[in-house]
Structure formats: C-alpha cells, structure tokens
Amino acid sequence: MSDTTAKPSTIESRKDDHLELCSTEKVTFKAKSNLLEQVELIHNALPDLSIDEINLGTTWAGKRLKAPIVIAAMTGGVARAAEINRDLASIANGLGLGFGFGSMRPLLGDPNSLGYQVRDVAPDALIIGNIGVVQAREAGTEKIRALVEQTGVDAMVVHLNPSMEVVQFDGDSDFRGGLATIEGLVSTLSVPVIVKETGCGLSHSVGKRLVEAGVEFADCSGAGGTSWVGVEALRERADSAGETFWDWGIPTAGSLLQLSKLPLKVCATGGIKNGLDVARSIALGASCAGIARPVLQAWVRGGKDGAIEYLTRVIREVKIAMLLTGSRDVLALQNSETILGNDLSKWAP
Image (cartoon, rainbow, N blue to C red):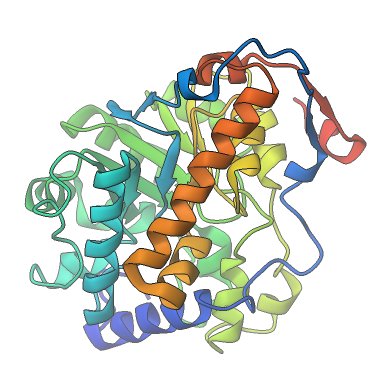
C-alpha cells in the first residue's frame, strides 16, 4: 500500500511504533557494523594548534553549520513527534547544527498533521524536509513543492527505502521511475534535493546515476546503525523475509568510500554515536555526519537538557579528534591521512 493511499490511522500507528522501538537497542544490526571502527586516524603529537582556534564550521545543503552535525531524520505526523521535533530543532538552532524531519507523507493526506512546524523555534537552523521517492512519484512535483512552502524547509530529502518497504505486508513494491522523479524534483524545487538511503547505504553506481540526474547532496545512511528492516520485523508488519534481510546493506564507511570519487557532498549517517565517528566519517570525505537514534535516546532519558548534553559532548569530541590529527578545520580533516582495515578497504571503488 502506498503512503498516499494508506489510512491516516495506519500511518500514525507506524510512526508511534517507530518512536517506541527506536528508543531501544532492539533495532540495531545483528552482526554487521558500520565499519567506522576500521578507520584509523593518524595521531599528530605536534599539532601546533590551540583547541580554541579549531574551526568546526562547514556548509552543507546550502547553509552554514557551526559544527558538522545534523540531527538526522526521525519522526513526524503524530502528537509525540511535535514535542520531539520542536525540542530538537530548537537545539539545532542553538548549537548551529542541522535538523531533519522524518517522512512528511502524513502531510500529503492531512495538511494539519502534527510535528512539522518548527521554524518559529529554529529561525536560523538548516531544516530538512523528507519524502519517500515512491510517494514523491505518486504525489507529483507540485505537491512536493507545496510541502516545501508549507513547512519552510531549507532542503528536501528524497529517501530511498526499498528494503524496508518490500518486506512489509502492506509496503511498496513498485520502485519504477525513482530516478526520473528525483531528476524532476531537482529541476523544479527552489531548495536543494538531498537523496538519502534508509540504513542500507548508497553504492558508487547509484551515486553516479544521481550525479547524472543533477543531484549535488546525498546522505549515505549506511548499514550498521538502525536496521529499518528490523524495525518492521519487530512491528510484526514484515513477512519472514524481515528476519532474513535484517542485516542487509552497505556499511556506512563502505558507502562513504563508494561515493568518495564522485562530485557529491555527502552526509554520513548510519550508526554514528560519538564525535570520533563524526571525525572518521569526515576523514573519509563526508561534509558532515547525521545522528538520529542516540539523540532520541538522550531525549527520552533526559528531555531537552539530556539531548543538549549529549550533542554538546559529541561536538567537543569532534574538536578533540581534529586537534589530535592536527586539523585546523573541516577541510583539513577531510584531507587527513587514514589507515583502513581490510574489511573496509574492500569497499573502495
């Protein structure tokens, strides 16, 4: 069943289930890591830097960030999402980070769906919209353009999630026309289009096709963090294939390597937990890194203050990693030397 025809109650139930499950550790990949542990940053014992002069700023999706971190897509469309999104968007605004909505598909059926109005608490932050490629295909570019105008987002994610959908009893199974849909949005929308996977990674060949379609920004969203196939299996909305394909996908670090030779500005998501993971991702060529489930868990434990404390620690850890590699700014970290483990090296294109 497509998102545009699903009953609102079904969508709301799914969103509530996602929030509940993603506040736990049940939805992680079982045997596959994101392989960022196989990225060794080379220690610089003479960095000739003060930690206070390190510049964490970067530009992504057309907007300047004070630190190379995005609070990645999580939720929307249900009452609880409104509180979460407003808190997290406000935090992003205060810390100079990016913030991404979960799927906006509820807005296609109900313009008053909860959780998508945050601009009043985040006037300066990079706010990123989100729609599935199948729903974008079915809705058409004019409706997606209306979502941009309604929510005031600075960029629009088009997410790709065939693995998550195809194992669901009521999920999408027709993914034809995806690239043409993306190309149409790139040429039509007034904001940047970001193409994002949903926990299974982007390959070199897919990245090349995206570049040919005019895409400049991507979110690799690799394997090793939250398994969205696993989420659906735990919701009992998947057939037996949900267990079989729980660990499907390209590890996050492997996806970054796959995309590294392409003219894409990439956000690394997929199992990013701390500032060292952020720094390792940037050293592999990412412009920034996105964190979702750990931020949600921090919010669940300690509310807005808990999420601020967690993200402040991550930012400090990025700065420490930059000092210890002698990297004065994000560009220097992108160009720093790394040593890659054997399993990760195999993913180089």
